[in-house]
Length: 378
Ligand SMILES: *[C@@H]1O[C@H](CO)[C@@H](O)[C@H](O)[C@H]1NC(C)=O
Ligand SMILES: *[C@@H]1O[C@H](CO)[C@@H](O)[C@H](O)[C@H]1NC(C)=O
Ligand SMILES: *[C@@H]1O[C@H](CO)[C@@H](O)[C@H](O)[C@H]1NC(C)=O
Picture 1 (cartoon, rainbow, N blue to C red):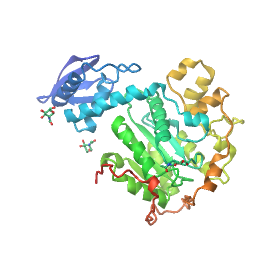
Picture 2 (picture 1 turned 30 degrees about the horizontal axis):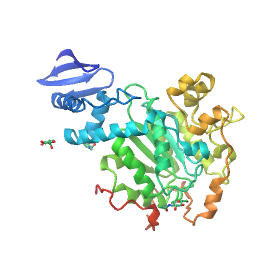
Picture 3 (picture 1 turned 30 degrees about the vertical axis):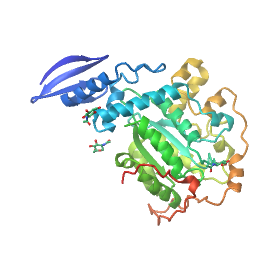
Picture 4 (picture 1 turned 120 degrees about the horizontal axis):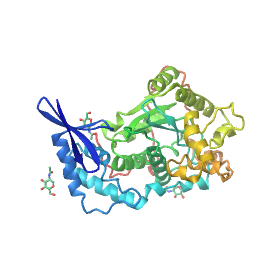
């Protein structure tokens, strides 16, 4: 083996030849590119020359990390990658992700429950959501897209070097078709596919019911098979625990299991509904997240100055709660449940060993359907 260093823009790569093949290795990020891929990275860089850097993130399209993610998602087709990346650059210029906040959460605390709660064994940020804690009627995806974007942009700031993906745990307890439907799912997954390529590590759906399975079936055709293969529907109690333990440290596994248990209680305890508040008693379950995450990213921002916030902002209501600014919650979710037609299905008997029940033929109201012009993969 023969090695030497090659300077490719700002990053130093190790350039090695091994049995006649040439590879580039990024010493910190575990990238290994052969010559063909390296040429494509350089070619893509050339095609982006002249584009005005993003004000808030001048490195965005200079970094090999970004270029490689976009190239991979277009199977190294430079023309397609160029088009995709240019659209994403303009998208980021428009939405300014580092300034993004979820105004819906501030106006109506608890309207989104999705929040970062810890890290998996590989250091990937773990984001949990539960429908019992946030039961909002969604016939538009704008608010959910905004909230998700806020979260994942902030999750990125907690990623250790070498980590570029995240993990979602979706707890379907309390799910209704108003709160989760193909139209909403489609809106969110399109943004992820177009602007966050190669970012999704894993999605674990727990407490899912036949309605969720029907919705997932309706949405799946619009999602790239590589992406949908990362979505795991897990049901029985023993499988859920086993799946968590395979990827999460035991601290996080215990936290999520306890959070799931409490979110099944009816009526939902106010400490769970107002999941953004620190428990009054230090021995109690903290719905804001597992203790290592709280210590590093929440309590710290509580104690230290605002500068730390630039690094990572937790769920908007947690941030408000720390500052003593959170407005009190109207019990809006109950009101909505009463006024909406009865699409609510309990995530029943998750203690059963059946992973899937008969998938219902879902009658999805038009307002919740995927747009007619959506592109299908299968
Ligand atoms: C999908 O996965 C296959 C197998 O791992 C891989 O060869 C292909 O490049 C992937 N395609 C995309 C678009 O990620
Ligand atoms: C890429 O686009 C250029 C014109 O913009 C075209 O000449 C070339 O054939 C395209 N390459 C591929 C691989 O599609
Ligand atoms: C969405 O819901 C709001 C209020 O719930 C309603 O005013 C609006 O007409 C609905 N939009 C569509 C497209 O159904």
